[in-house]
Image (cartoon, rainbow over all chains, first blue to last red; front, side, top):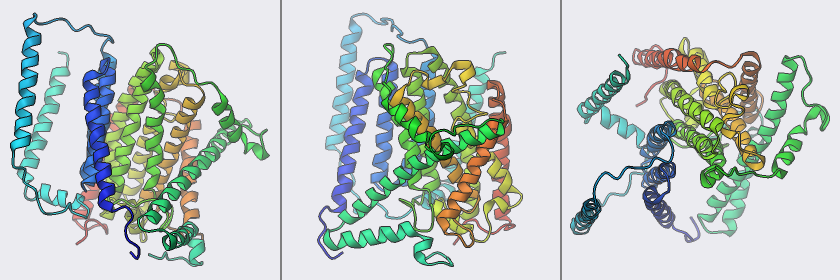
Length: 173
Length: 360
């Protein structure tokens, strides 16, 4: 490179990171504030896709693609499919009395406070290593089938159990 | 890497030569990384333009071929042989009014065509048209294509639920079930060329086929290609798997309420996806740009249009399948067959019966 860099690559990546981070948070707010469960589901799609983009900006390309494939492509489609099969404009019944609102506020504030305290006071380990600048797919494969093969197999069996369980529950007999 | 080409480099890779010249010119006057960004934007603009042209050529070819197969003429009035029919259709669609139903969810209704179209265009970023030709070469190319292939389902569901129309909802539900079902055999069967080549980069997969196109990697090659095309047709909602639109049953399914520009975008996406399936079949199984004498990108388009012709042939020959037949074919036919194909490939590679597999 002969001439000095006008826009450093780090700045571009940081810009992309913050863009998608803000998008993810806006999507998360949208899930709560949206009118109707369908809009909430679409906001969730936005959040999950933004998280996938954040993975990519951090050098985890495999993880980003899998995030889109699994969460956006499979889980969200199933959620929206479920929404389609339920009647629209469901009036949620008032389960609790007036005390419920107060309790809900208390739980929400307490949860936020605990999370905020943990996030701000923790000593987050900062690795000096930069994100690996080479294909992650092979490394993930080697890791899954060597170091973490037991966890990988247990997760596979767990998924199989869940699938068989779902079929057993769904069968009418 | 210079291709093994009997003609001059320019004929082998004219676009690469032009791109190199533009880059050299820009980097002489502008600091990095501006030249890279400008060249990339130009490449994206070129790919998008080429796709629009391809889609018009496809619509014309499809209508003429189907017409011929059904013993009629097809469009032959606008321009020589009806070639300009696509231009006329595009002008008609773009000048039509965009109607938004009162019952519609405006945001979902207006965004849906884009959610379907943008991934269809993004797939083209990684498809290698020739050596050194293409926007990007990702080492997770196959996974990238699969992830993008999952996104249009969301768009179709947005259109289905957002239109406020019962036929649209029915089409959306059919689409969701169908696309999820056929995604699984599609993912599995795309692992066959990945296993054989030992890489997920589409460019790498083509280069690994220099000795043997994967369709000729017997006995799995032809089976895998057939499974890929079947799942591919289902994924892009083409006849005989077009039950999400099924004009004779649910009028037009998820895009029943779309007019003008919205409909044009769905239409463009459908054909961009169809040609993406042809191009992927070419890349994964038919050796991509590889071939003697002719320049590589001409070989690529020859093969891709051949696959597209087969898709048109299938469309004009087979009747639409019933919903339960479609599901039975996915779960009892395509999925077990894809599993067996992938397993067989892995066994063959482990026993070193075929060349390829992981290197190093």
